[in-house]
Image (cartoon, rainbow, N blue to C red; front, side):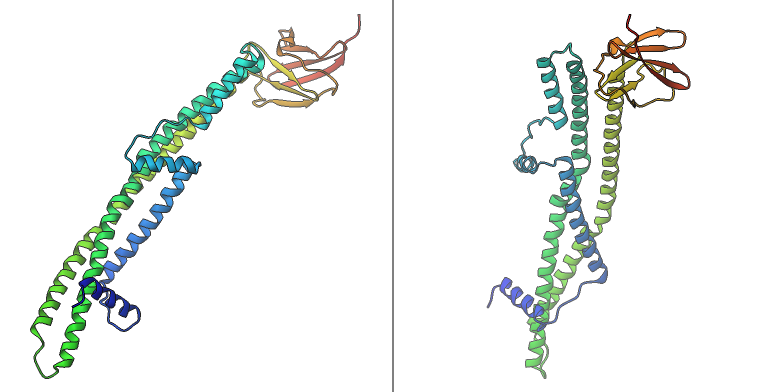
Length: 329
């Protein structure tokens, strides 16, 4: 007599070739199986793509996977923003912390480190509240479902084998009573199949609870993401205020453009730097060279050189600029 598993193989092959009858599952059970397959496939895709979003470096993802499988704690990894911030701070030390460029490097570097800290917190929250539940489903519940599903398929094959045996026995002894042994095997196989179908059905009906759990996890992930971006936006606003903070009205001149901004709020209509063309051959000036010549009307005089200057008039309506040459004494 052939081993049971070989009988299953022959039965499965004959079904595929259309040479054997196949017991169909209950339509409700079929729908549950289709829903479970869809849940598993999309959970895998969402999990993998979220991992790519949170950690774009494939080598780092492989390292995290290995540590997770070995059940070891992953070493703390510096974020890119934190690394950039540290580079800026190191550069400021070399260029001089008392220079304008060095001071700005320190300011921006510190905020880059804050951004990196916010990113680190977001990554941790996302891993705990979103990635872990999805991974637990795939490595826990889904494995159990798959195991019981395979067992159900084996029970179905056994049932169909018993049906085929009984049919052949009846054909061989058409005038005799049905062989008791074949009928007994069929009843046992039917009972085991029905029992396994019920176990599988109960597990599959738990997919609805899985969806509810993943829904809550998704909401937590979206909340963590919103908190992260809001925190980053807050840091960048603080950085802009830090960069624009000064004791007075600041003017900076490039080779062809004058950049005017208002750190102390004397302008009400200009929230962003205002760029206006100026004399192209004028050299740069420092903010300290902007002289407030008339406090009553908020007038500023900015010398660009020995023979050229600009007067800035600041009031509630905005800013007016007057260019002119300085007469030699």
